[in-house]
Image (cartoon, rainbow, N blue to C red):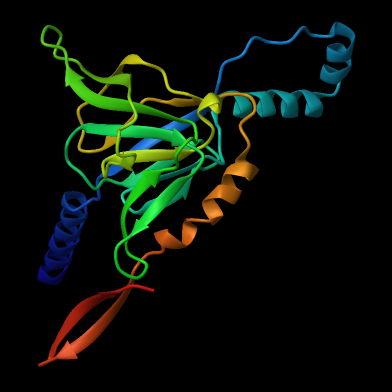
Length: 237
């Protein structure tokens, strides 16, 4: 009986530890930009819905197209990722201030410090770019939290700040809604949705990402024994 109690207590402690040390995330979703529906050919539509299987597939396809936009590359805090089939992009949160920049451009240049260590990233001259700020605020009257999104100017030094998400795409293909978006207070940053306009090309953007992807490799973790103690050593590629 005592062993069972100890086992249950141990499991509770483990679960509590996992909850306490859960990694904070920055999350946003990319959606298809809402567009006016094209004129429907009634005869063609009637032929399509006569087959229940085709009708179901068409409805599912349109639903996915309307709500999820996968294949969007972005970077933040030394990480590079691509939005999944649900349109979700997620990063480990590396700064605590409830504020972030969002850059939209097709490419960025690494400024190397030592070896393959990137000191910072810079914008490419004459390459189109849009810059936005997203900041968490609280309404003094209602006490509700909201994200305030605004367009801002490109920095004169072309340096991308550390607290920035860079979306790899042509600015004309990305729509970032401005103004207030209601949210909840959380240790995670669930940012407002970002919309993808017609003409967005995952293939072209992936080719741009290939040029810089090797700078985002994760460090290798090795263990070294010294005086009966194991020390964790982080080593680069």
